[in-house]
Length: 417
Image 1 (spheres, rainbow, N blue to C red):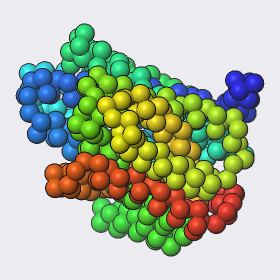
Image 2: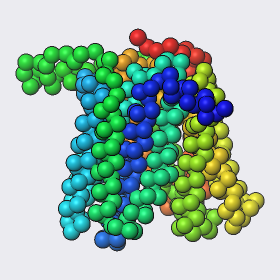
Image 3: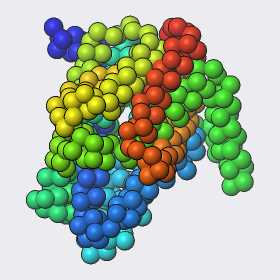
Image 4: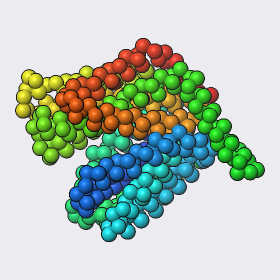
């Protein structure tokens, strides 16, 4: 029955499977490259500073350019944008074949790939409402969100295996292939129904002024729209929590739960299992669900489960199986949160400014992540690990309560004009 209902949704929206499939393949390539590069750089340098440089090369372009690239995404043909960006990422990744003996080359190339990705992500997310029926937006967003989790589950494992079998050369070759396959799939999408771009301004100064004006218009829309404004606040809160979790979860597993590196990797990957299962259920059962409820309840349940994950050791010391169970359960509200937030953003924005909104969201997520990393680094050394992780668990609960209290119920049930 579940499979039949999923197939029904996909048949009603024939272009969507190609978009979601391309996103899955492309993001698998991202994870393969991320894991393979991390392994290669640490093996060559033995430096945690170099490993930190990889994170900086991934996050900084998103923070600096996220809200600006959305301006261009809103001006360009989005189908062409997602095709060209995958081809550019393939070209950039191919240059990493020169980095086997020139380790310094990894950092600017990785930064270049992430600069290109700041164009791809808002364009891909903005395409979804143009390719699916309005009443199928929630299930299609639920399915599309699982591309991230499935890519994490598959790509991380494949990246580690490829790095062990063939080193950087094999990692890069497979990564380039994933981008080319994604571009081929995206090339088959129907033409973008986006309005034709305006004629270029006559001078470079006028063109720059036009970009600034478009960017300012997007900022005004986000700050002036109550739903968008609240979603940005919620995203900022939870992104800080993600930074704290990403920094302190390894020390928590090792020093508090006394788990090994293998057990840490397994616990981390198990969250994707819960997210994938929940996403499939949402795609089938939540076609007409209120995205506000998905967002608010998802965040509250996520925070409660996180608190349980960080406190269960008080009762069950030196036992790891509850961590596996809880991390799978945590994946369930993650799918609801992502689906609810994406749908609300799509519905609350106009097509001509949607790229700017998703670009700004990406920049805010990157900035919040960095703040969380800094908070965890400072407070984690000054205080015990668990109290700081409890702060991380409280942030999504606060975000969820804000969503349930302040977002109007079903007010965004129709697409913005």
